[in-house]
Image 1 (cartoon, rainbow, N blue to C red):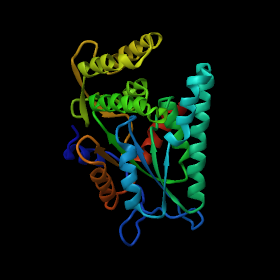
Image 2: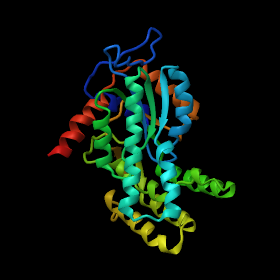
Image 3: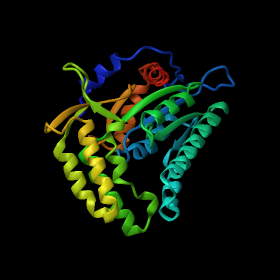
Length: 297
């Protein structure tokens, strides 16, 4: 699990930037019209990690200058419609990408109108690093405070299965989440490369095997082959073919990391809010330098 000492190490790895505060200490950012950049607070993490629950409490703490925007509000309808439309993969993905583009349009509209934004999202979306690069590009004119909402792999899978069972009982497809998205854990995390590198947790091969076994009942026979491929792929990406567990670390830099499995959503929101009042926004600049420079090579 995430430790406070690990968070401290993460903070010191990032380069300094400027941040604006209100008289009460709340991160503001200001408006473009007033000559300042607006602020976007990003809650990033896997599906069902706890981002939405935390966002509901955090937006209240941030105050009236903030508008909450969630990726789910833009893409969920596309996923539901795909059940009936059964479009080819490339057409389906293009529809998702268009809605994500619409989301960033909305964010920039808010910033231009003098508002700040709390964004509940999965930066890696359906395209991994390509989607991350796109998101960083679209937020260039904003001050950005990046928060990773972490939740252990096994806990995330358990939450998805419980959520899906409830969604089926209530006939509410909007709350249904694909286990395939969870198994793309490797888009957000990677194995540590060095002995002294910061790590957030350990990932066990048995957790992945159990996730596959538990989720099989939610799939038709024709989909099990795809699920099996994803399971094999994530085991390979984390180097777990010949070992039982591996230490993992985020692929991106974050200004703050909160473990959503260790506290209530309200408590996690307060942790984020309190840390925002005493730190600089550093991670976005570092990610732009690393990810965007790499993608242009």
